[in-house]
Image 1 (tube, rainbow, N blue to C red):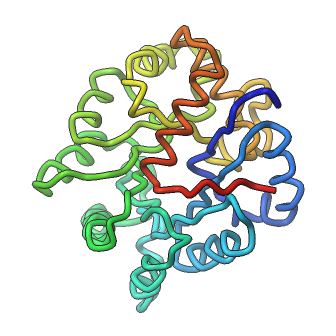
Image 2 (image 1 turned 90 degrees about the vertical axis):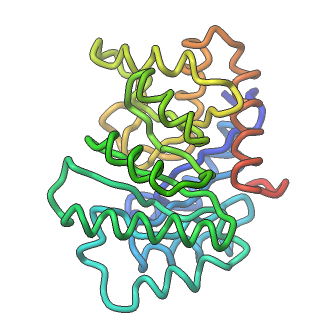
Length: 266
């Protein structure tokens, strides 16, 4: 994988203890795999401060700040003010992880919708893209974004849906990002691979969602950003492309969407 052109892992939870406790090693593995930039994504106000601190000390790492829908019910008074303050920092390249989730019953759905709307407005105010989480609520996500009534810059991360669902997201102007599930052998994921084959090349991103969703042949292990190379290779195979071309395209897309400067991990 070291011969790949520069790859960007557009979604990694570097503040998770499984990664943060050995962060220098994790980032060294990135460099060895051709991964030169990583977006560290937060899920709480505390995490947001943590990922920003990580980004400030490491060239090639950037931060996304926000409150995950499953964490919104736990947000303390003042947490949203923290997010608003951090949003203006130059190392913050996105707002999120935000969105909606009907799989887990951790936050009342109306509160999830409220926090999603807050992120969308803040992203508009600071001209930042949004990183959107969607689990078992595709129609809810599409509906809320359509009601917004204006274009949205951002990405639906770790996409797991069908081509019909992908088209609805693309029609809203968003990018789609693919993670390790694309590499799993399960026949139930064939519709996902069908969608991945058809997404326009200029709207395509790759990610790990580490420490989750480790790709084959590391399935079940703690994931890390270097393994975005395995997902990129599988995505290239699905699309009938050279992996070098796929990597170059997804990196170009990530740098354009998130406004990433030409600074690499080292």
